[in-house]
Length: 224
Image (cartoon, helix red, strand yellow):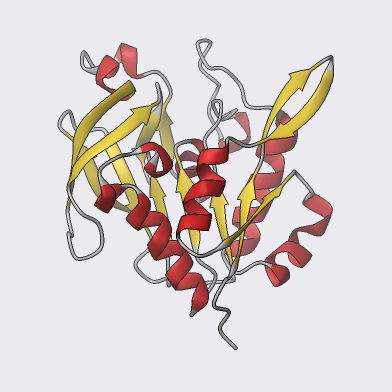
């Protein structure tokens, strides 16, 4: 039976605080889910309970954070990377891998979350845009335009970004949008109900079609 207010799992980021790992999430994700009519629940890494989490939640948001460690995906990690904590990466790798057999569960990956989706799908990262793009500063705490290949699924327009890495190759996923300099800005899997990764932060993008509407679409998909 569809829920009018679906439960949306939001993966927590991790930091070391007072010498202890600490799980946290910025409230912008929570506010966006509430505005869409969903019930947000922030989940810390719990790899042993991934099947239970998938059974209990109606959709998942994988949030932004630091940079993936790429040795598990067959490539050395760039020396300029700010490495995400292992507990988070291992949990989200396992969660995305398990979700591969649950095509009906909506998933949205934001910034790091998109990169993890692409890596699990067999893709590769450009690990340091300053080495390859003179326009790299456009992607660090700036707004810039993205161009969609299918505006019936995703609009073109202005977005807010904060990243120094990007997908080089999305693997089995489809490139759905790019920036003016060719940086991949969105990826999806058209065979699934809702499986979308965006390199920008919709929860901090003022342009409604590429901001709140994306969270609305996730929650709507979760209702069904």
